[in-house]
Length: 476
Image 1 (tube, helix red, strand yellow):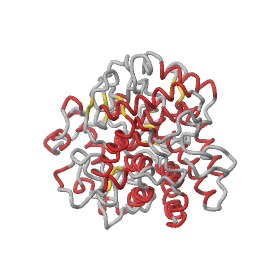
Image 2 (cartoon, rainbow, N blue to C red; image 1 turned 135 degrees about the vertical axis):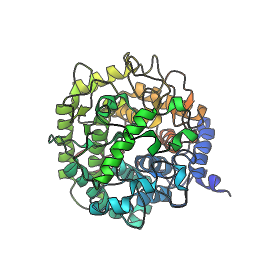
Image 3 (cartoon, rainbow, N blue to C red; image 1 turned 180 degrees about the horizontal axis):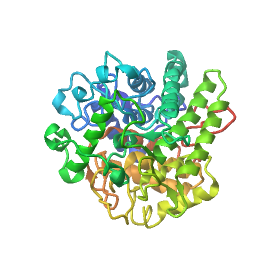
Image 4 (tube, rainbow, N blue to C red; image 1 turned 45 degrees about the vertical axis):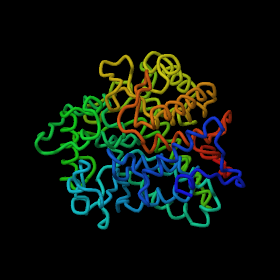
């Protein structure tokens, strides 16, 4: 039996191993094939051509889908990533594969110089990484992976092994990245937020002098159309910010870019709730973590909610004030059940209104305001729809009882992921594939939605993750 067939074989005697509906068998097999093709032996690359290393939040989303195929592989995915954690607690956004040529991706290991420039921050010496981070989806992923096969997880000591690392990761963010002093975490580079090229970064980036074009070579243009990628000017600014951060020994709080982002903080809150569940599984109380998540939710509302926009906005700490652009990031807090009901209702209206058009003009959630001057349906994070943000919002809609809207979004993700050959992102109007195809998290999250029991109002992170009782089932 070949490896793809092994992955797609179902373990029918286990209640938690969901069989795909007959109508979606083709999608299941094809998605499993993508994840097999992208597997390196210890982790999964987002794309063999464009992204040939391990990416932080990609691996978290990929593990969420892999749990339906191989819980062991899903556990290994997260363990491999966390093994590259720095001594100060940060989880780097890239873990480099030493067998990949340096010119296959930029910025490459010789740009970041993690083992030397990051020495004071405790960068590992045996593996090369970047020095920045990505959104903290990892505790959420770890809990869901555990729920897929609790027996295997307990036998391997999976949660006991990852919990200290996840706790250290959250401590780093909460203690070292509260640059605004209001309790929220800040990102110090657009790549950290994950929505790299969002128009929300245009104003903060305008203060950054770009690195000279001759000082770097963009490998991404070898694999993607220039009109779909960031401009050379923006890329030069990304390089300048990363260079300055590296040359400062990856010390936080000194750079020209510092932004409080709603999606980054919402995912930290979701992962705090998940860490509480993990603590409970390990026999420790999770009350303090649930309370911290509630405090962070209150800070998120206090600092980033904008009633006039009907959603959350980013806060520019160097420029002072909220950034007016409407990004999908400002809708992601819908994932959180602790939001006030009036804010939930407003977010749902905004999601279906003229700025995002879900269910009327668009099938998947665009990454930026359809009516915004900077909107571009094809350019990286400036308008195209991404499958991971639609996955998060599907969970948010279900969490708040919007089952019909959630069901429609689920069906759209499944049909468009398969039709677009599991593309990196798509035109929000037409579903036309953009970026790389055979993309890891697109395949993984389509699998997760495929295996989701239809019609159930389950929590976005599995049973019990967000409740305060520390009682939860093992089924995700």
